[in-house]
Length: 69
Ligand SMILES: [Zn+2]
Image (cartoon, rainbow, N blue to C red; front, side):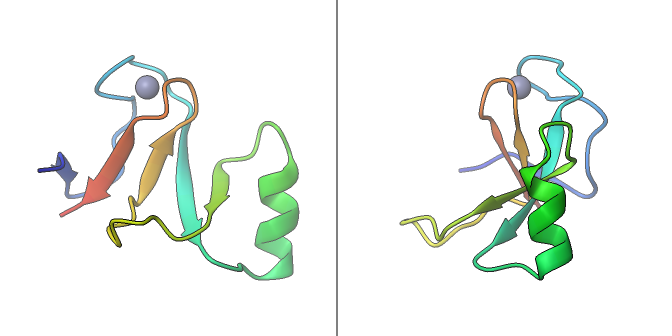
């Protein structure tokens, strides 16, 4: 079971960090790619997760995965 959220929370439910990033799965458009390369970026890119359930957001501080309901 994963925690699910209707929309992107302001802070990480686990560590209270505000460093929540939008997750793009697979190969994103080039502009998104450039965005994600910046350290302060609000997006991150992931490959495919093995469990086939991809989170909508990931906490950059603790790695907590957040799922959209
Ligand atoms: Zn966190």
